[in-house]
Image (cartoon, rainbow, N blue to C red; front, side, top):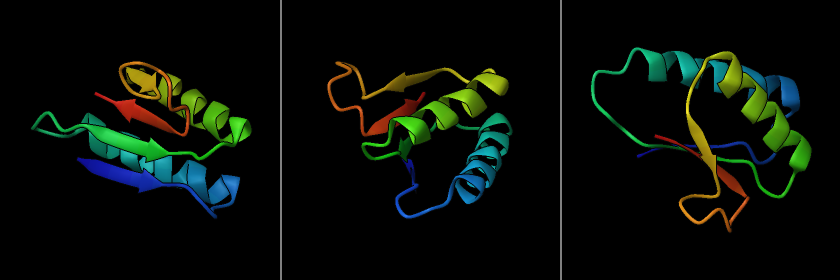
Length: 75
């Protein structure tokens, strides 16, 4: 599993890291799950979702049950 922790990052830096991750995700050869830790910031979560949607990447907020909203899972 690939984990990207955005705690303590500015939005610009976080966006760059998510875009790098999205590019890496698009070119992957193996199915590997990705977890992006956003914490409790709804603004950070919205920004991450926006980038993922720009790249047409399927995601799930908070895992299978959607209870823990502090991370986003890419599958």
